[in-house]
Length: 282
Image (cartoon, rainbow, N blue to C red; front, side, top):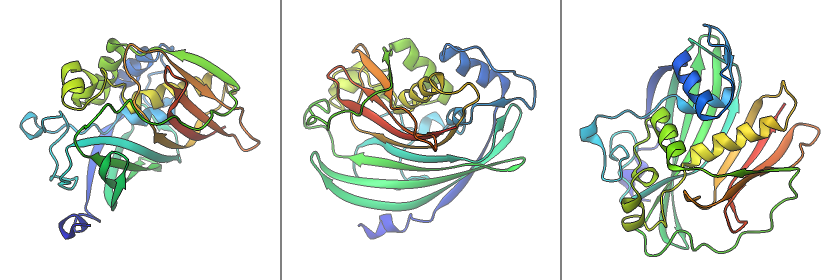
């Protein structure tokens, strides 16, 4: 690994945010579910934490892909393409309307690899979220940096056979859903709203569905098939291939074991697993 990149391990920063009633109301509307109680102190589902801590950098500090430019908090990896490859999250306490929360982010590891598409660098960032009552959640994110597109990212080899699904639902994301999610999370990555950029610069067949959006919809679907009082306890998520707007997809999951652990996944139109979550729900 480049010595300059190694120097970034251990860097940290803190960001403050608040779970507000307007944010919860807008997310509930996007999810097509009745809004939760919005009084101060009312709890919201723990995985709704995903809409907080947007990386609201000044417009002048954005890169050509719409992401914040590298070299501020994230290291200046000399590869042009960026994606969230996976995340592992454990929830410790309820998130409540009005809670002021703090996220401490630390660069835990930088790992270069060689993949099918060329050189890769994985940057692992550990986020620790605390609120008025202490720990709320801990999440590790693996951010993958890749070489420029040399072919279609859609042309990946077939995946292993899918698990036996206990439930399965259609998932048909459209441009409005992508817009609303990106607006909620203040996500400027152009592959989610600029079809010409997604095709011409990054080699995708069309607009790419946000991995965070697919994760959110998959967890919501799992809760619809769980006990009414169930909640998300922990998730281990891996992004396997992109979903594309305008193409049919499905959300599915296995039956939980005695400890509430189950597999959840999103399938693309070819029946291939696009995103996988090992979840603990109870």
